[in-house]
Image 1 (cartoon, rainbow, N blue to C red):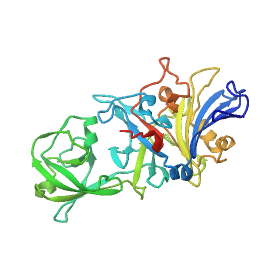
Image 2: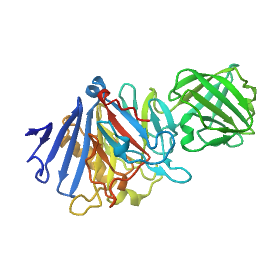
Image 3: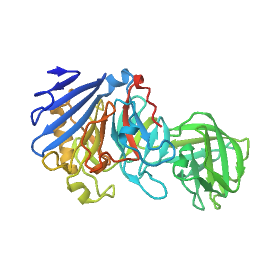
Image 4: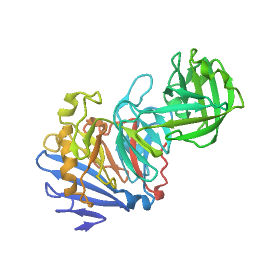
Amino acid sequence: MILGGLLCLGAFLGCAPGDTITEDLAAGVVYHKIHLLEGPWWIHVVEIDLPTAWAAGVRLRTAMAMSERGGVQKTSSLAAGALAAINGDFLYTGKTTHTAGLQIHEGRLIRTPQRRSAFAISAAGAPLIAVYQLEMGVLTSRGEELRASGFNREPDRGELVVFNHYARAWRDSVRAARGFLLRGLEGNSIVNGAVTARVQQVRRRAWPLVLDPGQWLLAAGPDYAAAAGIAPGDTVRLYGRLPPARDALVEAIGGGPRILRDGAISVEVEKERLSRTFADERHPRTAIGYSQNGQVLFLVVVDGRQPGYSVGMSLAELAEFMRMRLADFALARENAYQALNLDGGGSATMVVGEQVVNSPSDPTGERPVANALLVVAPATGKDAP
């Protein structure tokens, strides 16, 4: 029966164990709440028919906690105005708290990839899970190509490092033997793209990292002599590539490990430098995956650490569910063919219609996180930072 946009495959509210509640969120976007007795497990799935959703203006967006200053926020706070959201990547804590791996927002690079898998999507709505490699450089006005080896971090003696306005999330200033302040003239993304910029200033000292979205900073270490010829007024071209992706990527979020590869369970903990215990124990989980034809995307949260209610899954169990059982509930009757684990445990959170729909495992409730992946529609007006 359908009540208020909800379809229950049993009795509505107090659905019998083993039944499913389904809610339409937007064109091509559906939420499923699934109860499986054998865990027991409560599983939450947002299913997105990408061609239908994209045609209706629905998009995926990443959100960074505390805007451009780093830190943590609850997924429900990051998801304000969104159709749905899940928590994102693992985080590091220290002088600042920040996401561990790759993040791209609206084509702008926020955080570089580590040697773990990440999920990305192109402007056309094509998903890709891969271990990405960042390649960057500068073409000078004299036709010289200078390779950059870092992004938004202090340069080593023989390095050239690129900074954008997101750098202040991790540091307030950078010391460079030579620093070059650039103003963008054409283009705004170096994610499988390029930016033409003019050199505004050159100096040898610490630079405050107060850059606006149209500014860039090149910082050269004392042994990086190749940049010595760049002068104020020069026009340069910044470029970047993120193989294996060929298309321009508009959004990306890190995680790890990959758990499905080409339709087969492939829990790649050793390859991605994660512990086998982390994979084998049952925990709350968050994951993302997509069908073999790349047209159906699944956002998945499994509740856990709550005996008698939902016990969580090992990564192999999560992979098996996404590989074999999603089609039992999905409107598209598709399973995941590729899938990636994201941060889980107490961080595992799904938000639908600005409400947390799962049961986070921490006694204090929803745990703050470093970033999130949002499903947004034009009507929401959501433009995540």
